[in-house]
Image 1 (cartoon, helix red, strand yellow):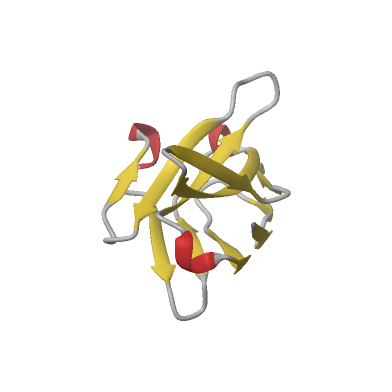
Image 2 (cartoon, helix red, strand yellow; image 1 turned 60 degrees about the horizontal axis):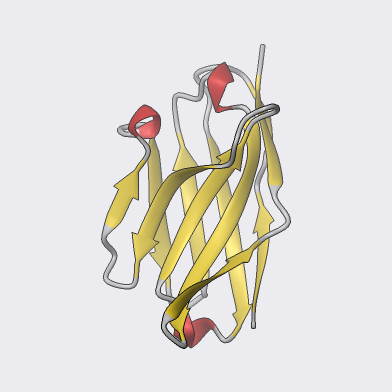
Length: 119
């Protein structure tokens, strides 16, 4: 089992910055990738950014150049630095960990942290 705890959400003005962090515990050595998803009201959950065990990263198009995902394996932590925030970035952000077990991917989720971008 893997437990994920997020922190760092809040209210920020357009153009501002926030950093989200997620700390993993449990069977962390089995984690292949860590990611951030978000879900805005009335919309489906979408992938924002993902970083694999080899530090390969991938971003959703609308956040490229503004968000940076990073991973600290020593601290079992993944962070999402968000710059130039826009109102459309408002959502609940969820940390995700994925591992491969018994020929299938298993996903773990944090409880979510609210990010609100508003003046």
